[in-house]
Structures are given as C-alpha cells and as structure tokens.
Image (cartoon, rainbow, N blue to C red; front, side, top):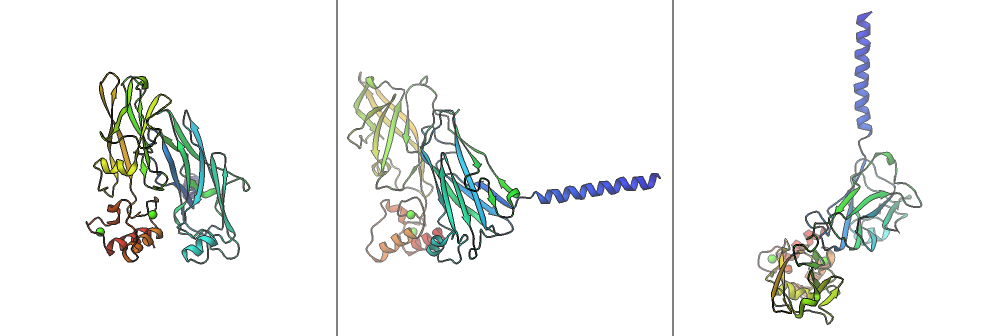
Length: 371
Ligand SMILES: [Ca+2]
Ligand SMILES: [Ca+2]
C-alpha cells in the first residue's frame, strides 16, 4: 500500500505543478496600459514652480487579438496643495482610429469604423472606440501611444504635494472594456507625480524661479513671455527699476515688474532671453542651465540670484508647435522652393546639425515625422 500511496502523492504534486503553470499562463496580460514619457517633468518631477502643461501619454501594447470595442477612463487626484485647472484628452493623430484619422493618413480601414469618443469629466477623461462591420479593431500587434491627457496650470506648494493618476470607469460602459480580455488587462498605475523640492521657506534668504518650466517653444506667437519671480524678498525694500534678468534684460510688458502674492515678478520676451543669454545656437538637446536676476535694494545693496532654466527642443520642429509632422515638411519645402520664411530660431533648420541648411535637413525631417 505504501508504494501506490507514494505514487498518488507524486501524481497529485505533478498535477498541482502543471496546474500552477497553466494558471500563470492564464493571467499573462493580453493588453498593457502604461504611461509613457511625461512632458513637463524635470528629472522625473514636477518643477517646484509648477508647470504650464503636464502632458501624460497613455500607451497600449496589445498582444494577441484585435480589440473591437475599448473603453477606458483616467482621473487625476490632488494631494496636499497640488492644483491644476483642467484635463483635456486627445487621441494620438498618428493612427487611423476613425474615418477622419484614417482619411488624413490615407489608411483603410480605420480601427473603429463606428467612431471614437472622448468624454471629459471632472478631473479626468474617458476614451472609447467601437468597431462595426468594417473597422479592423485595435490591431493585435499595436504598440504605441493611443492618447494623451493634458493637465493645465499645474501648481504645488512643496514636496509634500503630488498629483496621482489612476484608472477609472466612466459612463456609459461603467467599466474598463477590452473586447475579449477584460480580465487580462495590465494597468501600470496608479502613477504619482511628485513636486520637486523648492527652497523651503525663507530661512535661506531670497531665491528665484522662472515660468513656464520647462519652456517648450510652441505657440510662440501667443506664448512668448518668460516670467521670472523673486521670492522671500520684501518688495518694499526693492528698487523695482533696477530689476534685470541676465544682467541686461529689463521687463518686457508694461505691468512688470509687479507684486504677486509674496513675490516680485518680472518678465522677458523669450527670443531675447534665449539670444541675450548666450544660449544660441540652441543645441538639439535643449538648454539645461541657470539664469540670473539682479536688482538693488533701496539702500543700494546689489543682489544677484540664480535659478534653474530648462528649454525643451523637438528636433525637426521648425514650425515651433511642439510636434514634428507634415507641417514641418511643408514649412521646410516652402523655404527651399517657394521663398518661404526661415524658422524663428534659425539653427533649428539645420536639423542634422552639420552646420549647413540643405536638402538633407528636409530628408531628416521627413524621417523624424514618420511620413
Ligand atoms: Ca512642428
Ligand atoms: Ca544640415
């Protein structure tokens, strides 16, 4: 009797082992939903002075089958004194999600022929896509950024503040919908975005910050002002007419310098700031350095404060709108063959950074734009 019992135990153990193996396979995710590289972070954190836009890309990796119906939602929570004014969701224009996107890209059929939907709700957004008889669904091998969520006017008061992003259900589906594999979706979150530790309090004396940080050269026509603030300095003691950035740049707008809360704010025209600061030509990796603001106290004492400055550059973005796409190819073509204008930052036209602006730079933009 002992030998058969031993055999039975062994058999049971083998069954258990193989069952565990099957179970592990069963829970292997079929879809991964992760946050890609976030625009607006410096060193992985929200700058102490806040950021104008925090752009959070959501990436799908679809492993096996096409997904004919998807519905996802995400929301952002404020921790401590963190704040933002709104969340805007946008599908990545680089994929044929629906008929308009597919026609734009010259691709047939779209993934979701019944349409895609963006449903903003308080502090979040939902996204959905539905395939009828003609769409392909989200392809089996899809690996890319599906959409972005942009938070505006992100501010915090210190390192104990944070913004947390998590998944959520949203109407009308009420749950995360992934045709066929609802249970096998891996969500990489929740994601916590911490604020950088700024100089805490005023024990260490006055300090300076600038805004927006990092600077992204998009919408330069409307957004070309860099604000520079002086904190922990009693405005009543400061000779306002002596305030200069980089030792030579006076305020740009008529109302600057002005008092904002406990701080003094001056401003600079961004092109002058970049030009007067010895940052030109601007290298492809952008500018990651410091600036200075100088002023005199009313008693004549000269003051000089140093703060961090970061400029992000998208190589090939000659239209200065933050993305590299067909518009940049057109802009460059116009320049070569139709007496088109130069990029406002001329060195950006030398896309391959070899010292000359020629047809190879256009080729480089075509490459970078993925056309
Ligand atoms: Ca562009
Ligand atoms: Ca070149």
